[in-house]
Image 1 (spheres, rainbow, N blue to C red):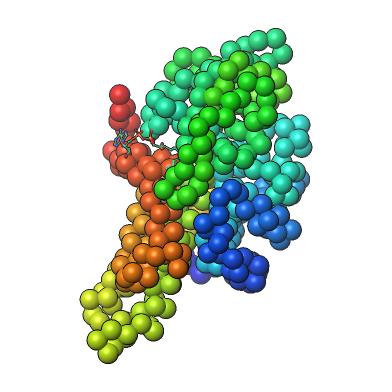
Image 2 (cartoon, rainbow, N blue to C red):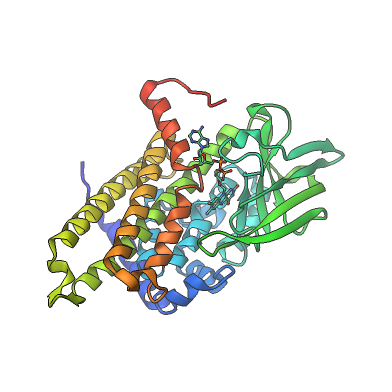
Length: 380
Ligand SMILES: Cc1cc2nc3c(=O)[nH]c(=O)nc-3n(C[C@H](O)[C@H](O)[C@H](O)COP(=O)(O)OP(=O)(O)OC[C@H]3O[C@@H](n4cnc5c(N)ncnc54)[C@H](O)[C@@H]3O)c2cc1C
């Protein structure tokens, strides 16, 4: 077993790092506090080949591996934490599910604008009464002439304020087996954008209501029985979520490390106090352990989809580690860490959200317990 990156991987990571330091580090603070999607970053990343890293070349992507995409998130976030979201949107999220299961016509219609950074796709799973229990979703797809009629609501959808395209989880029939998905253009007649809100991170989201929305037959992604495949694709999104937790935890750690080597109190550098040295040792242990679990899940997936169990372990650990490390880093930096002069408080707020988004830590631990005991534990 070799824990080092290959020469090719190291070269790729270093080239992303150079790009990120030159193009994204300037303005990183302002970008984190700006509303809306960083379209300028998306276009620059597209030109750099950082959107569609794991998507086949035949579909307009780079034909790389999931680990390459993880390396890109880490390198980008080390210079500009907010820009890591663009790597997520262009590689790990619903774009990956579209590339995996979409028809040739769907891919040719939608992928090109997503891969040039002109458009973004959102995934609508969560509903007011279906959060962790996502299979309770009530948004229905009823058959009509030439397609489907969609009725229902979605909440907490990331990018919902500006995404052109939605990958919508819908119900064609009863039970888990009745769930599938459609591609819905947000401009479709009957899509109502409800109240605007913000997460603690500052990201906007809007309620989405669907009233008698027509979706033509050719926009069906996965019909009845599609839920398992959708979640298999969603595990890629979870890897990107875990990678950002780790990367933003590391960003905060590096800021605190630099601070501890130049800030003096009681006539000594902060890094000379043992109470803080042990905090740093704990942070480093957590970051290294999280990285190993993340790389295992990503490397084992290679071009395909990562295993549910390895993904759950990596995400649960990275989410907790990223938050704990960002929290300790903030503490080490005192009032400066708590203020918006640096991005440490931003990293903490972002990491907090990923403990809930994309399968909360508790739900992932339920999944891990099922693997441990080799049986399912229905929560109902
Ligand atoms: C930053 C952010 C981004 C998001 N982006 C999207 C998106 O793009 N698309 C989308 O569809 N959704 C999105 N979500 C929604 C997210 O998927 C849900 O918030 C999540 O699934 C939890 O659902 P809930 O908020 O309804 O909490 P609930 O399901 O009500 O859970 C509340 C608490 O109870 C715990 N809990 C629930 N059931 C169990 C159980 N059986 N065992 C142990 N603990 C349990 C949960 O872990 C949680 O801590 C996002 C959320 C956040 C915070």
